[in-house]
Image 1 (cartoon, rainbow, N blue to C red):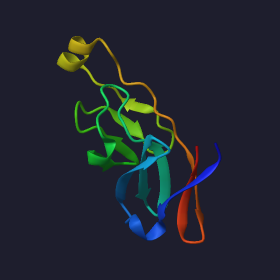
Image 2 (cartoon, rainbow, N blue to C red):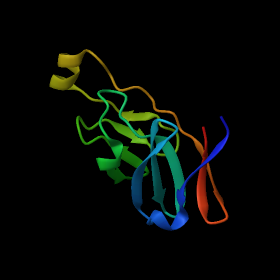
Image 3 (cartoon, rainbow, N blue to C red):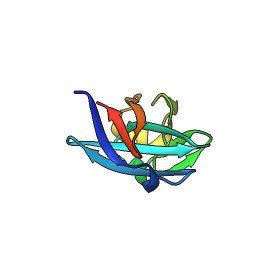
Image 4 (cartoon, helix red, strand yellow):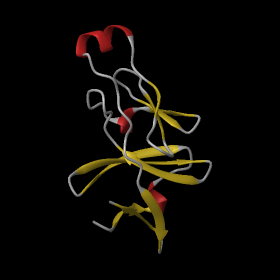
Length: 111
């Protein structure tokens, strides 16, 4: 699909994150230690909005059932367990990580 402009660099604070709708996809963009990451914005378990999640140690924690995803790779660092897994019979799966770059004060991702 190619590079798509998402937002101004100024819209994202260091140690912050924000969800964006890009070409019909929810994308989470995070800035940690002045490095910017972009991954799918919905948890792969039950669609929790990761923009409402908590950032810890270059990971985002899903606000619904606490699956933990790497901001850099989208990899599931800690899966859901117990009651929620038993009820849904579904694990969280890795999310897609996107290339992201700054271009003339704007952030663009490669979809």
